[in-house]
Length: 261
DNA sequence: AAAATGCCCAACCGCTGCTTG
DNA sequence: ACAAGCAGCGGTTGGGCATTT
Image (cartoon, rainbow, N blue to C red; front, side, top):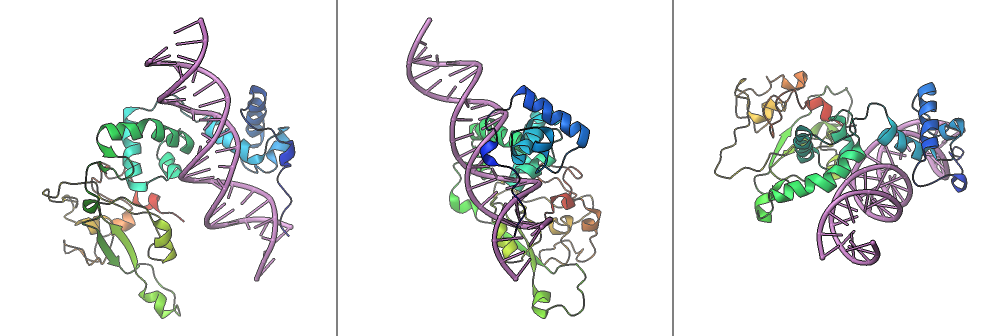
């Protein structure tokens, strides 16, 4: 048997929150802190379900929320993060202090989508709208590399052979579930390169360190390594991507911070 | 001035993965 | 082991406000 229900839905309020409800919720969380949303409504004297209280607090009442208009810098950061992460609003919000996933999601749908459309960029793919579909799927490189993690003795031989792959292409598309289900990668993320004119050579390695793109990503032992540093790169352990990816300079995006689960 | 239309955003809905009993 | 609840997430909705006709 499971646990008892969190609240009686028949006796809960719905719709817009009143000032009194807000005050009760704020007062309760100030006194007892966040968490245990299940018991919070009853303890705080609110006729709301815990889920509704959590949403109200996170999206509206939290004292560290910025409110107000998004800055141009925030706009550009959201665009860049979206090109990397897709509709992972909570991850994007994690990079924008004082902003919530709901707020960013709304802002994206109402402002940034239109902004990109006006620039002639498809907000879903971050590519020029008139670009042929075929071109969007070319130049997809798959880097294969054995997992650097130390295997414990006695693990299945088949498991030993499994590859973990980072799919690097200039197509932004997320099918992370499939990738994870196939146990190909432990990152719920596809890292994709920005659109580039085919005539322009890719110059995304780290010229400062002399590392190629795959080494800069911390992908050791990659077949795609072109810099001769196979197995010697320690960027992964440093945690930084170390190149200007979509204009995100080293340190803005930390590789480890993109790991999920 | 009133009606129609468009926009914004808070809140809800439904799903997924994890936890609990 | 299993069923049911919880927390968190992304998608969608609808009410209120602003602008246009």
